[in-house]
Image 1: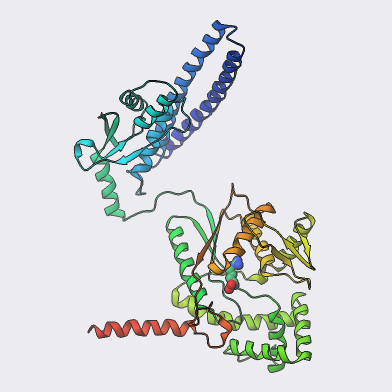
Image 2: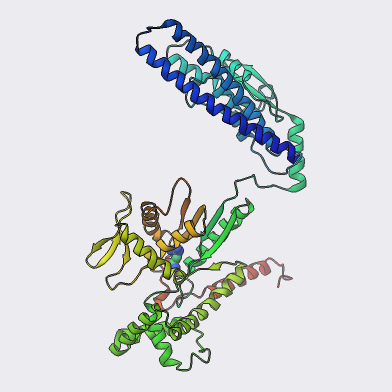
Length: 499
Ligand code: ARG
């Protein structure tokens, strides 16, 4: 079977090569013919010879196209060796596209119209209704043809396929397609045996950036949405046999860590030896923030800590890790509850890469000075620029996303990157994609990127729900409450065996 397949694949490749040579030849002749016409038919004998040659070549081309289509159909796994699902309309479309292109090589992009037949079995299972619009195209260019004749020409060029039993021309030029019953029965049997199987797709590497909560903040209910939607997309794409990587782009870097570390040093001087007993990182954050706003000396120390952290000073890195661990443990409870495993690659992961990309963007002349900030504009579709470097020299959410997209597309060689983030960030991602294209990181011919936005979660005040409002809902409690409610409902219905 395998030998057979590779033979067909080779044959198809050979035939394809021949077709492209012939095509180039036909083009050349066409050019010569038109040159000669311009020269006012000076040499009629030569012209006629070329026209005949052209027609012959077109005919050979058509025959070869059919042969290729047949080879390709054969080299695809058939019902006997695969339980993969096929699409009837896709197959019919492919077959009739080949036939129509071969029958009417003078029409560019001819219409291929496939429809499900009317309920009367007399008219077959499907129909190809292309003859009428093709007749119209000819009529417009002054050629008289009847759709019935055109339909016959389509059938003369139709490659054979085990799915198609027979075709009949009906009425003004409809082609009724009758499917082979045995073929359909075998397909159905395969479904009953193996269940619904995904269609064959080209295996691509996909990175899905989802969940992505922020350290020292409670996981927001919006992050829960991203987690569930992202995981759903991941499972669906995995079912289709894509190579899926789940990435958790957590917010684990930034100036807020300066004040958290300074506060940690004050509250738990022995934190480097003993794990500090912080259970509620959010109130810890609030305390730190209050001191930061009120105490100048503390503020100064917080800034110093940021500088030390960003230069990877070991004690500061250790303190930062401790803080991240507290949040991480909280997030993990939710991931465990939902049975989700993500690879953590927070903003901190991209730090050295961010330094590099900022330099590259600068050297390539993409950065503009804007009142001390370094900004980068996307394209006409974007009206706000990215802030690549802040006026104090620090990096931003924008710059680390530039580093991340480069890492994903160029180092990780992903074919497709999907970001599942609330719609409030739609503009951010529009600018990200535009800037990445401009910088030559994202090649639309090779890569696919998608922003999958979802509704922003609003608080009772109808404003965007903020984690730091102080009275945020704990997601774990929310999940527990949801579970309790569901159980209560079941119990009410008398199913008290449910525990
Ligand atoms: N941490 C961000 C937030 O909570 C979401 C990150 C989304 N992913 C990204 N690559 N920007 O808003």
